[in-house]
Length: 175
Image (cartoon, rainbow, N blue to C red; front, side):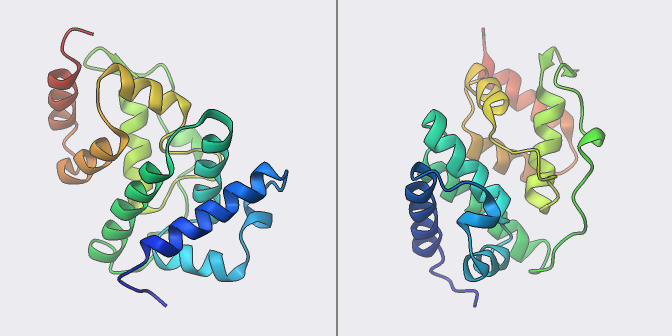
């Protein structure tokens, strides 16, 4: 089922979900059938993750479909290279994530978005959290970092929060 040319199919599923969402069809379990869900699973994505991107695109016009594809590409690459196509266990409980007001190096939200990015990479986001949500987008705009770039940074930095903090400080400049 896994093909090298997965992006056009992902985009078709996204576009159809947008059309159905705008027609008042709501819920990941309704928007995506077994075939779509199986495809998403094969690239390390859940129906709920894609639903969250569709919902935010329809309601807030962000993140763009292109951003959703690029984030899915990073997760897919991580899933295939680091996890060898095998899921990495159950979602992390939402209560285990840093609070919204937690700070690192004077940056409020940074500990939370780092934890969410790591969970996104590993496929362990709980259903009620989204990497790229409104809070994440707000934080990333303030520090002048694209959500795709930040997810790649977290992957390459592994568990080195100092490296992530230095990058954020450099990009944020005088904010």
